[in-house]
Length: 116
Image (cartoon, rainbow, N blue to C red):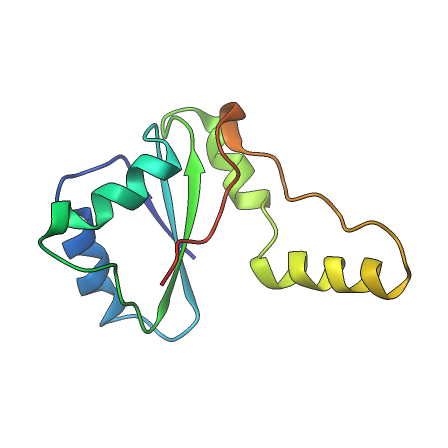
């Protein structure tokens, strides 16, 4: 698990470079005050690049203030995607309603995985 706090205009380049050095299945959290929908557009680099094509990293998003301890703790306590999917499958097999996705940080959009 890695964490990038804040936002830079060259974030797509940084993520692409990091992807070359990490093991498959590594998780990168982006924690900043930029809404997830805006991040997705900014990572496309205004049409100069296609979507990020990552081989090793999974990007997870959280909206919050990187200097607020409770926002950082929410990331630490967030379940992995695998755990959420397993909980949904178990509920489905039992005929129970699927668990809701975990709430977002500071009331913004849900924490989600970026499309690859």
